[in-house]
Image (tube, rainbow, N blue to C red; front, side):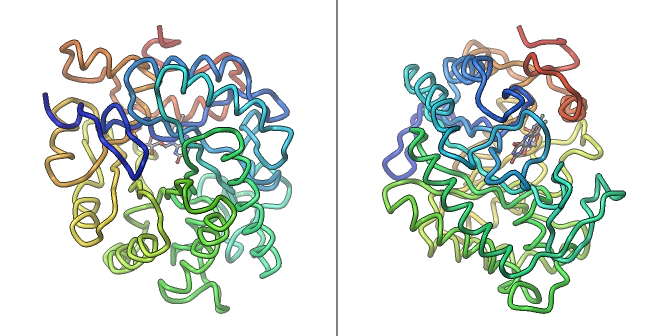
Length: 355
Ligand SMILES: Cc1cc2nc3c(=O)[nH]c(=O)nc-3n(C[C@H](O)[C@H](O)[C@H](O)COP(=O)(O)O)c2cc1C
């Protein structure tokens, strides 16, 4: 058996294998942002089907960081109980689950959409964004730390800070969205300052033994060559800060669907793994056993998968029984469904509802 299917440990967290369900938010929560029974059962189903590590879809750290209705919230202690039901369900099966937390910045459904420099979110260009003050930055840093502590109290195995996909921390990191001239804008070091302060505050809040990880883009929309040294610098900083693992994604996994393409960010992820001594997982376009083996054979520690599990939540069980490829064709229509009011659970357009 290839080592992708063998046990793997990150620090003191031992996983059944090197396969991760990447954070995938679905509008399954209650309208007030609390966890629904459907979400608990969905998490249990994924864990029972041999996914080594589940990363829970992004929970918001504050109301102004919420992307859409029914997104889970964790900006108040009253949401902890619901999350506990998810962690208990996963742990009962022997699985592991980390919770991703996020402020979605200019993508927010709040009337005030915060951003580094007032540039709107690319998919909602008609909605103006507000440049943040340093007080906003300090307030949100504290909200990340407070929320991370709630993640720990809810029984998760770790917390992941979302620094990817054009949301707030990612916009600060990107020179395309961050045009600031203060201490939080300019060269790569300054653009990383906000995320770095968040990571420090989170680490301090949760303590040394609780795993803090990061999801970050491996590329940017414009002048991408200049981003590579910044990416390596940020990953080295994260290593120094005691980050448990880095999940490498990218800025362009969905608008074009990328149907037919595989493991989009493999080259950069393999380079990061070679240059920085930190566990790395790759997400984006991993669709088959051969894809997974190729990623692991290139030195990357874990494979992370999202859309195929909406299509086939039991995909890894099927792989273990001889299926070689996912039915997911990366059409990304599941992603578009996310913006519609569909309260009854994950959907793949191929299957209407995963069986
Ligand atoms: C419906 C849907 C919801 C998603 N929600 C999140 C999320 O909450 N946090 C996140 O970091 N990425 C999210 N993603 C992105 C995935 O985690 C992943 O990075 C992306 O889909 C590429 O991986 P894939 O090719 O395996 O699908 C979402 C994707 C989809 C399709």
